[in-house]
Image (cartoon, rainbow, N blue to C red):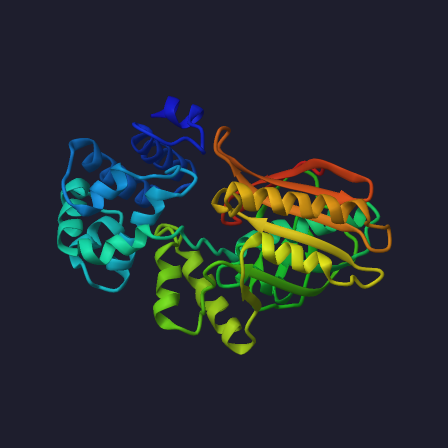
Length: 360
């Protein structure tokens, strides 16, 4: 499994790749401290290898895309978690409590009983909205301001899901001893900080707008349940964060539209930019879900806008994305004019538990 994990190509598809994707996801979850999710994914993987019948397993075995890039293992894991959260399948309770259980038998029975309800979970990628990732965005903005970009940020986010990270200006951050944002804030983030502290310029987030191909309305209980189902059950603090985000979104909804990433970025970059502001594109754990043609259009739009950026109206790109080969998440920035080459600022926990700062 470790060898498969190290060398699998995230874009690979075809015979044998589904099994490798499940093995990769198990190791990924274990290394992120998600032991229950690892057990669930492993059990589904065993059933796939055994040739378990049924429409759900048939669809997964014949997956037409790239199963790892499409997060196929997490799609079925989300569906199973939803059965547990809704109380639809009480037999799964010992597994989700972290107790010893016959994982394979429990998962097989749950899938047999609820196959019709689980099949739609394969239709779209996980919605992995996590407010803790905002801390990495803010750390990158501190670095950008320290490198001469205006400290007033106009934020554009793709893959915003429910827009939880679009509310980043409402949160409080303590990053290596550096405080940012309102006190006490709708939420407070103080990730374990590893390495030298970040720069300390005063920054302001003047606006935040985002898009998603299937935006989630946190005011809808069914949609909120779907988001909760994608939270790894062993990371209990994330459920409290979700509750806080739901309350904050109901108080003042985030600025979120239904659009593809490329359409949104192209339209946003075409708008006039105020002098003395830094326009920044940001995204976290979403790039792998963006199709190749959309990635190309976003990249081309950013390059074209960067070519005409000025010191008074600069452009930046902040990405917190998974490196599936080295198994870590990298915080990478680019900016125009003058910093078009990617700079890796940090490694970070995927849900904001820690940031290992390099500072570029």
